[in-house]
Image (cartoon, rainbow, N blue to C red; front, top):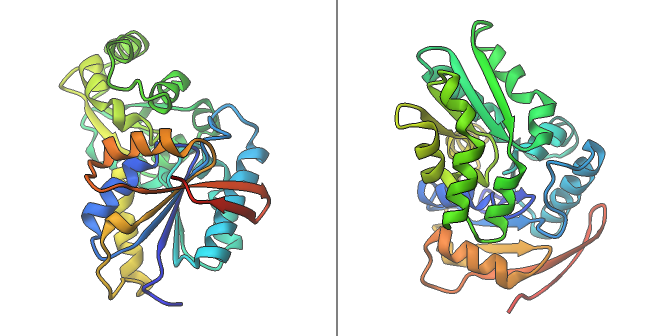
Length: 281
């Protein structure tokens, strides 16, 4: 495999941009291709079989058309549903976001009381519980599904007073739990991190599962001898969305803090492993 090939990232929407932002900082020599399946989000309320099928469609496109060397499932719901099958069936390394986030939380909590906010799909999968149990049966995990937070981000309302009010009301219950650590178990949620921190209190440390995942990506590149030998300009990274490129570009430009125009294209996934793309202007 050519170590100068790109790294692929997939997500149900724009949330995975929180992962790619950190990856671009830590891995300046790597090229990234991102797919946000915004036409079919949110994944958190979909049946597991659908999430698996959609994730495989994106993965197969990136492998066959873009020849990626490593795949990152930058979505907690898709990680919980599809990661084991992807790792078995794909010929390249595949990384999810749950294990790195769970490990970071388990190692950093002082009182062994951890909170988790995620989609219903991630919460119901108990993927975080299973991972955290590996670090100690005495750790208590309190989980709460927050699908409304995803919609706030996807509609570009994540900086508004309405968003602050919703976050404050939804997370009020955590004030009574004595947690000292809160996992942001959806890659959309770091865009709401400032509101979340205020809602749960300054004494609670937030764990950004996506950011923790970038450390694992770097480790995989070393382990599999896949570090790029060419320095790419991240302004040349490519972003695909399955719905409106303009809305995606607006959110991506703000979050990634880019001054140059992003290369955002429309991707029409029409069947497992089959996709057509149009230039997004």
